[in-house]
Length: 405
Image 1 (cartoon, rainbow, N blue to C red):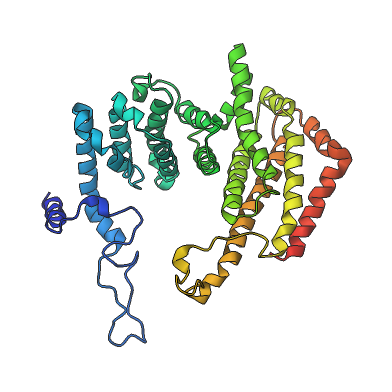
Image 2: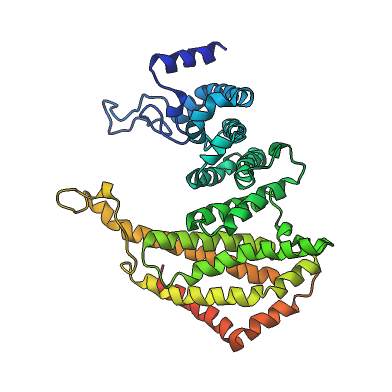
């Protein structure tokens, strides 16, 4: 308690609030790890005396947690007092500490019960929630609870009339996937938001928070409605993958390409888990939806795009203004001349990840370890474009080697 009061007085005396200590930022002008003296540093001028972020974090985090719980208590009992502070509370939902992030999310949910606050909740706020959700896996053992808190906000935004959202008895996987897929369907959803959503689902499947079986779960249901919904969820993963690679030939800007390739990589990563089905009905759904021919077409689009990496100037890069001298309009340091090559590498990494994930999708559908009939996807693979699909895949692998990247 004495330590807590001490750091509270310090924060108050310096007229700084705890918001100034952002997660992952360097604290007090120091480094993540304090620098040590070197042999060539006789006067030890390179030794950073300030406290490292990790140490300062361990001392200030208890204060943040107590204050976060206090904010939640007030938002629950007297939400009108924080109505004007909704935007400020939203800035704290991206905390890497699960207790702080969940408390802020729960506080936001309480404030959204007031219709006026819900009307002020914009799509920019939705994007803030989605980007913050990607950080929920920083502490894997608390990730599920954090994702549920975030998704409660999204569900309230999608269904304003819903009540007691946090008390829902639905499985955690369904509560997380449902609002994400609903946002994915909206035409105004940006590629960046789609990348966030697929990244969340991909990580959720990795940590066994989200069930990949839910995308083919209609095979285990008896109602006609559930049968349609299962196929619809599968298509919500497959269609963004197809659209992303279809746009590759039209785009030249690095940032637009990176967003599309991020969607392709993450959606294919989700799909490869979906394709690893153990029940025949789910496997049959994948065959009926022509997953194999569609994936072979994706491979063909990527093959046509791959040769553009031979020239580092093939893509347009808007150099950040901080790297440009306002008077000479040239880069302020020669190291910034490497930016096009760095961005080329980033694009190529996402492209290789997409190729790998698509290949694993096809492989998983033909796995001998599963109790299903895998001869159909093999025949589809061999028959695609009269066998040219396999030829394209082989030639593409040779092109990658020829690029020397």
